Length: 159
Image 1 (spheres, helix red, strand yellow):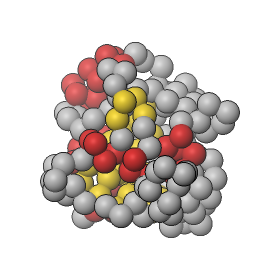
Image 2 (cartoon, rainbow, N blue to C red; image 1 turned 90 degrees about the vertical axis):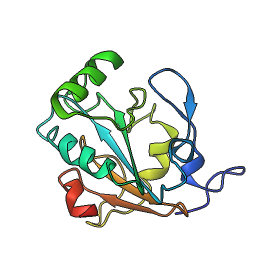
Image 3 (tube, rainbow, N blue to C red; image 1 turned 45 degrees about the horizontal axis):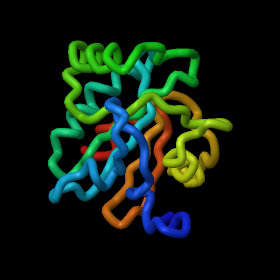
Image 4 (cartoon, helix red, strand yellow; image 1 turned 30 degrees about the horizontal axis):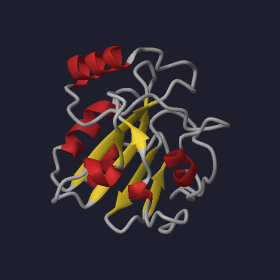
């Protein structure tokens, strides 16, 4: 999937809020060396929370920008405030990649970015709603999206 909306050319240009309430896009979070973005809906009290360790390892690759989107829609596993989420991920997993404002990834209040991402059929054939925390989307510089299940480990995608 590349073209979206009338004035946007790529999923990389969809706006969302960071934890400080500032409008961002995936493209704006990247650097000159960024060639791929790894977008993940994250949670602090999930059986898959351990994925933060490998997400952080992937974020050390200068060509990959990992972006986390906290979401509390799955078993209320991300109940914390922005500061609590940042403190937890930093202290427990050493997370330095950006975490955005808490969002909804499914349903009536689904964030626009995830409306577009969930339209993509995953490598496992799944299409539609996010299934659980830590569903992963890799977006290349041209805006092409590859979708992975929550159970897929980040190192299986990048290493």
